[in-house]
Image (cartoon, rainbow, N blue to C red; front, side):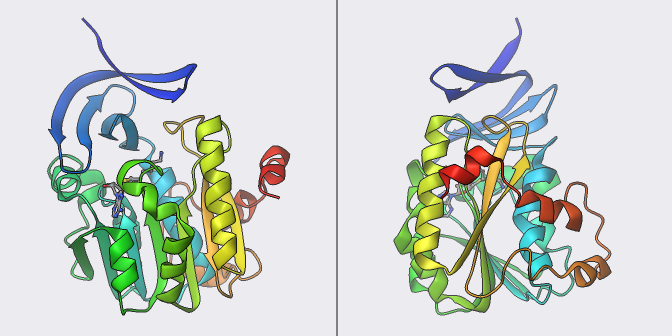
Length: 280
Ligand code: AAT
């Protein structure tokens, strides 16, 4: 009999993929973790029934969550990643030889260990010598940290369960305290399409605006996330994502990216009218 994984995208819409093999399953202190091998999307990481990463389309998410900030401030040297236990965001960051320190704060050690074991395509750079891994709640880490970062990437689960506090005004305020004057915060900011994620996107964006003078959102196409239309937030104390884009400097890194490029960077901030109106 065929085995299928199904994610509920709304009360009336579901998304399914045919499973080749169920590789890993564990209930951690924080969430239910599953890793599956699928025919269409390769290996996939599922937390509490929601897809986090797939081998086939993770490049889109990890390119967009990493390179947009790096191209606005190519001098970024010290980066904080909150969440991101699969290691994909850290992998993209380690490609910049100019980055000196990467701190990653992931609440769930089981996600990291399982990713190292079964998802080498994202986790293989967690051993880079510039990376320090903290197994800790990102909310507390940010509140107590005395460091100053150039870039904070919030690579979090959706605002239910352990990820909920990563979408609050208080958390964004704490992030702002540990960002330098040219600091940038990038977050995964949900989707405008279905009603649940739409409300989450609107709320997160307006809370970012309470804290940061510059807030813009940008979009990308992620086939395995609900509706396939996904939004990221860009927040900064001083840098604008388009006016301050450093095309030549970023090109001079010579990175070969599969999704991101500087033309797409500019286009990604051009939003569909219905999304613009939601965020007014
Ligand atoms: N790189 C894409 C994968 C993720 S995983 C998000 C990670 O955030 C998970 O490993 C989860 O354990 C971690 N996390 C959740 N809450 C916290 C917290 N409070 N502190 C630190 N880490 C946390 C993102 C997928 C996005 C999915 C969109 N549908």
